[in-house]
Length: 396
Ligand SMILES: Cc1ncc(COP(=O)(O)O)c(C=O)c1O
Image 1 (tube, rainbow, N blue to C red):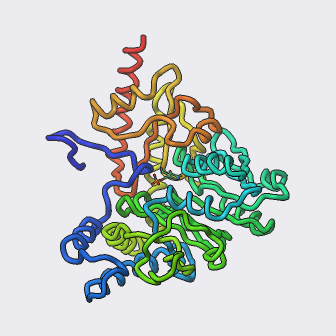
Image 2 (image 1 turned 60 degrees about the vertical axis):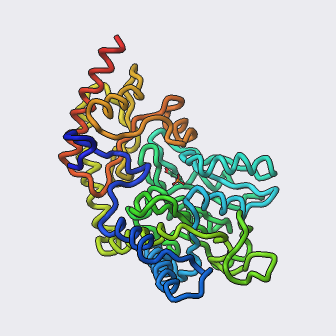
Image 3 (image 1 turned 45 degrees about the horizontal axis):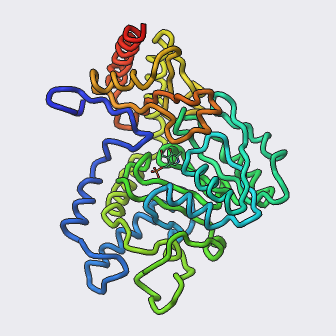
């Protein structure tokens, strides 16, 4: 069990926020960039930049392969998935357009849309049930003549529920709409096939299920969108500097400024490990951990478990509340007494909490990752039992 503070065990159950630890090779790759490479991308003429180009291309190629997308040049890097979603929504939607989103969305989708609403873009929610599930049959009646896109997450960061992106993608394609997917929680854990799922824009984060470092994310776009999308940020691209506008070619069109190069190195190493290990194996492991933790939590009295409680329809994320108790105090006790790291609150997704009935206080979220051990989950469950008892005693 990794050590948190002198002699104290730490169980890290906040992988939905960011994955920890990272697989072998990631730290070394970040260090390799800083210690041995050090130069800039597309802004230097000397030989070491070739090594850097090779590694950047490797990361793009592996991502294209992971998401079954044929063209690595359409993998555009950003500073993270929040930026990617802002680029996709603000760059593709115009005044008068309408977009449908699920009720489980993160603020990374809803906040840009509330901003866009002030610029004449409208949106409405596709309803979700109290376990977070979405019925694709509810979508067609919500379509309007000016609906241009459907944007939704693949897996909920609040309660783990998986949305049926294949069926949603088919509906989008049939209606001639853009399909924008937020894969923050699912990339690296569930198979995503941009072609079979009819995804036009796939947004991803490096630091969650892809097991890379924070500060890198991206979006993969269908070729015809390259010339249509308005970049959010423009500036130096290192090439075509004589032009007053950024080049139309992807990925440069969306990649102005010096990027997070050590992040690219770390991500390439994480993707190498991911490919070697295999998504099926990672998913199978997470199913095992989910069922183990679920069984443990189900033993605890007066705990309310949210989500589908079924590993076939949920990511390895469990959200709980304890009626009558302040879940924030429980999380504090878990950390301060037992060194178990969880997260409590709305998880940046107020609309999802409204959908599942946990607004306004939110939930305590336990999110194991591939490297979590079943014995750590047993420890966390008994720590949670003690914390619930303790907070209940204080509350009386
Ligand atoms: C579903 C979902 N979308 C978007 C984000 C935003 O990710 P980031 O903060 O890495 O940009 C998160 C982060 O938790 C998320 O869970």
